Amino acid sequence: MKSITEFGKMKAKKEKISVVTCYDFWSAKIIDSSNIDAVLVGDSSAMVMHGFETTINATTDMMCYQVSSVKRGVKNKLIIADLPFLIHRKGAKEFYNSVDLLMKSGTNAVKIEGASGNLDLIKELVESGIPVMGHLGLTPQSIFQLGGYKIQGKDNSSSEKIFNDALLLENSGCFAIVLEMVPSPLAKKITDELAIPTIGIGAGPDTDGQVLVLHDLLGLNKDFNPKFVRKYLNGYEEILSALNNYTRDVKDNNFPSEEESN
Ligand code: KIV
Figure 1: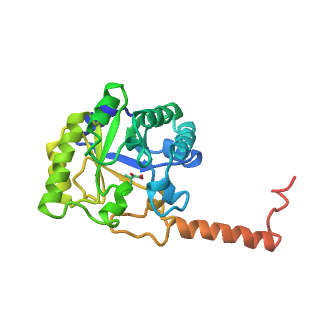
Figure 2: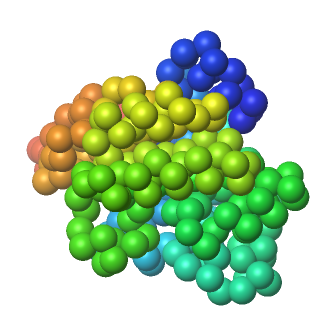
Figure 3: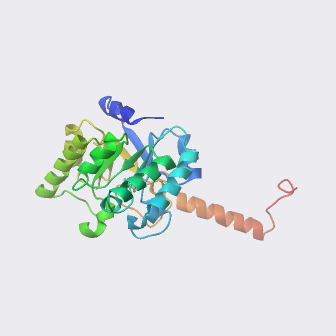
């Protein structure tokens, strides 16, 4: 398994880091056999797996259930799990309980969105031996504050804030930072400045690694085609055609054949 220290070494060697989301056992098994470096049990699962409109519906229970499924399928990858919406604003007891449950479910690290108001919590987690990944730029848990899924840090003041937040997260002990939907020059500036790796999504080619949602790279949602996603499979059409071929064979009495029967 790649550890968080290896993440740092990969940055030093200029070896890019590949991260993909994963929420269940069967895709975890496939990812485990691949060359992917780490898996993110993202709260994007609320949208991708459960059809909610935002990530706000992810709960500690949901995340723990997914982390434990992923853990059973992944033996050789670093697992990072999102802290669910608002858990860090519900008081120390609820916050630490959520982190504790996620760690006991099998995650190796947690990811927290934003810097303001989180720095002391991040320091405490790191002091307690829990690796923390930061997340800046488009932070989907703040979608209503941000006014939509759009690029962040376009003007001077917001760009400066993201840059300064990245420095604060590094100083607080984060082992890596996701930069989501920020202009490439800003992602490069942060990447060049920080000793810890940056992992980009919609942030251009100059970050130390990239993360994509598994379902996006597999092309499973034909209606989701943002500029930053490259589809490595036409998954929607492939699966649709498999299902229709199966149904055709059942209806034509071509399945099962004699060899497929007992
Ligand atoms: O929840 C998620 O999948 C994420 C990635 C998009 C970075 O946070």
